[in-house]
Image 1 (tube, one colour):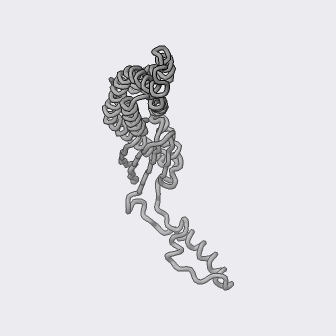
Image 2 (cartoon, rainbow, N blue to C red; image 1 turned 60 degrees about the horizontal axis):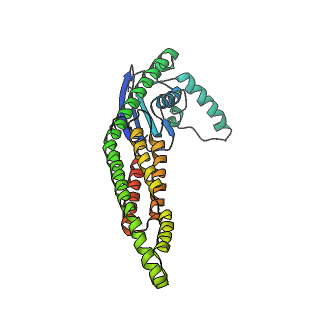
Image 3 (cartoon, helix red, strand yellow; image 1 turned 60 degrees about the vertical axis):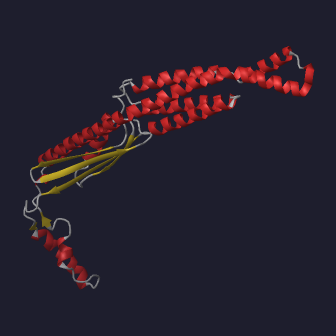
Length: 296
C-alpha cells in the first residue's frame, strides 16, 4: 500500500529573515482541527501580513489549527532616536495650559518622551517603497516557514502510514476470522435448538421442527452482509490512504461505517467465539479512528 501521500496535522517550522535595518523570525505551528483555522500575530505597521499568512496557508493546507507568529525588530542605533523638539514643545505648551488652570500636574519628561512623534527614529520604513519591500520580504519568509510546516506535517504522515496500514490489516484479519466463526454458528444453533426443543417437548420435537426453528434463528444470525461490507471498507480505506489529497475526513467517516458493521455483527452473534472476535474488531476500529484524527 502506498502511504507516502498521507499528511498529518501536527508540526512546527521557523524561518528568519532580514532586510536593511529590519530582522524578523516567523514561527508556524499546527495541531489537529476539523477545518482550517489560522491565527496570526504580527508586528505593528505591517497589516498586510495577516492576509498574506491566511492566503499562503490556504494554498498549502486543508485542515488543522495553525498559529503563525511574526516577531520583528529594527536594529538598535539605526535612525538615531532623535528628539523631535518641535513636537515636544507643542505637547509642553498644551500641558502648560492645563497645569496653569489647575487641571493637571506638571508633566514628567519620561512621560512626554513616550508620546507619539516625540522620538524621531528616522525609520526609513515610513517611506512607502521601503516599507513595501520589507513587508514583501517578511511575506516571503512566511511562505518559507509554511513550506517547512508542510514538510513537518508530511513527515508525520509518513510515520502514521505504517500504523494505519497495520490497523487496517488487523481489521481485515479479524473480519476473516469472524467469517470462519460465523460459519460455525449454524452448527451451534442447530445443537442449541435441538437441545432446547427436546427439553420443552420431549419426544414430540421432530427433526422437521428442529430444522425449522434452527433455520429461523440462523437467518437472524446471518452476518454475511456485514462481513462483505467490512471487506469493502478495508479496500476503500487502502485506496484512500494511497490518494495524494487530504483524506482525513473521508477516513473518519469510513471508521464510522466500520464500527456500524462491527456493532451489528456483535448483536447478531450466537456464539461466544464470534462475540470475542467482534469485540476485538471494535477495539481495532477504535484505534484506527484515534489515529485518523491526526490525518489531514
